[in-house]
Image (cartoon, rainbow, N blue to C red):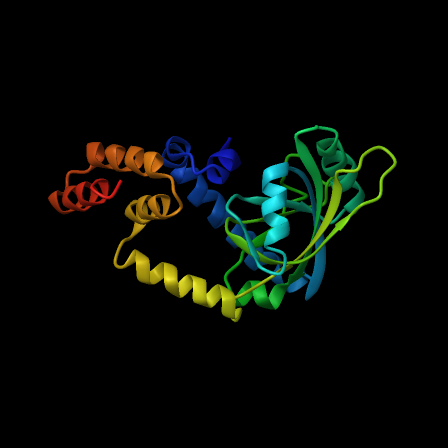
Length: 232
């Protein structure tokens, strides 16, 4: 439910689970610090999942560009588990494409860009079975290659090669600077509402600001939220 809420920018779920989101991020960050010395400098992880045909077509058009995962990102060191348990079953759905993401991770880049991840195979739900590496939200990757996987059972299986990017990426820096300029001095929930407006989700932004108005006791905040509602 949490990841679905983050992916879909579900205002109700994000507000209700804000404490848990913060706690999980902090826990991943703490584990990352503890494990950093034992992690290899560079390694690969895998993720199998389904994408709608529409989303897959959009991804093909952005090949060479950047891709962000808004949710907590569960990956595995085990390619076969990711492919057989997640990518291939997703391809059997006529409305989706089965994707095997191959993610190239450089720990130095992750450290510079504060991208936290942790090995959770001993604390996760599946224990050691999936060899799980869990990334905190908003890990950003470059889409390197998209290639069809030849399979006797389905023609909608693809391998997508990604490389994690950091703060030294020019395209990411340009985008980040543009967003910060647009956000101005907005912080916290007000920031989220403004982003929802910018990405074409005015109904969700309105819902968020109405909830915030009902909760706040600050006249300054009320002025800010009402001003933003005027843009919806």
